[in-house]
Image (cartoon, rainbow, N blue to C red; front, side):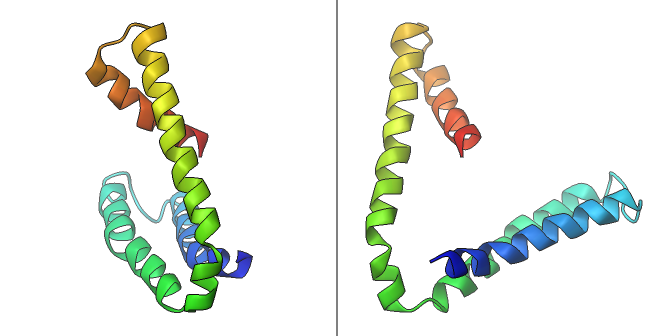
Length: 109
């Protein structure tokens, strides 16, 4: 499982590190950052994840079903807890509470 995750995530990490090194050496300016970010997020990340998923066997994928279920339940549960906490404890409106919950989830990951 670790090899599968590393095989899918490692190209993205290397891309981010290359971008950091390129910025450190001033190879790209601040005006180039949105273009590079868009290229990486729209093309490189989905292709790397797709390639990692396609090359994984069905046996490995079915072996990880309990993990996927646990992750889904924990993310949905955390969303619900933060939503209710914002709504009832902090007395925030529903639209603000609904926006705060995914923000907390993204920070927690």
